[in-house]
Structure formats: C-alpha cells, structure tokens
Length: 124
Image (cartoon, rainbow, N blue to C red):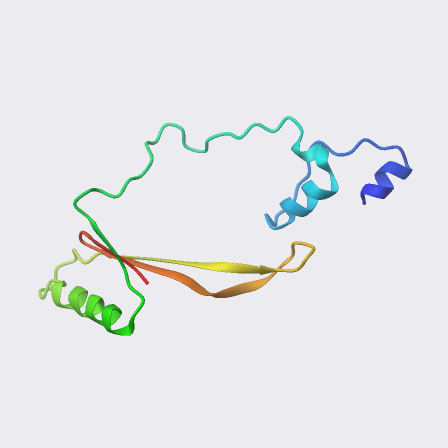
C-alpha cells in the first residue's frame, strides 16, 4: 500500500481507521506519517490513580497447596446467611496470538489469574 502511495504521488495518510487495534503497529510501520504530531491524551485526567490500600495484603501463589488453602479460606469466610454482600473480584490476563502482519489469531493460555476478597488479593 505504501508503495502505491509513492508510485502515484499521494501523500501518506495523516489518519487511518481500523476496527482492530492489532493493526495499529502494522499501519504505523507502513506509514510513519500516522505517528507525526501525535500527542498522548490522558483518558481520565480527573481521576486519581488507583492504589491498593495499605491494609490490603497481596499474595503471589504458585503451588497447588497454597492456592487450595487460599480458596478454602475464601469459602470459609463467605457469609453463611443469605446476605447479598458477597463480593469476589476476579481478573484474568492472557497473551494474544498474532500473525507477523498483526492479525489476531487467538489467545494464549491464561497467564495471570487474580482473585480479591475483602482485604486479600491472590495472584495465581
């Protein structure tokens, strides 16, 4: 595409639309003009950065026995009544598999599994 722009004497694009963010690096590689005069804008400048409160404890668990113990601890601490105040926060992260051209072909195995309950954060 870049060669066609040059052959026909067109200016390189200043903006480009794609619905796949995986195309961003590929397009910027093809057209360095897409990086010209780009100023990063903070998405939520009015918000303070989120920080883990000092009273919270973070645990990195990598053994089956410690993971089991942490999950048993959560289960034992859940309210026994029909209370609706049962909040367990879960977050998973994984790598995205892409082709050399930047196309997303799938996702890898789960790399990080995080669970938070009350003031405990478990990173598995």
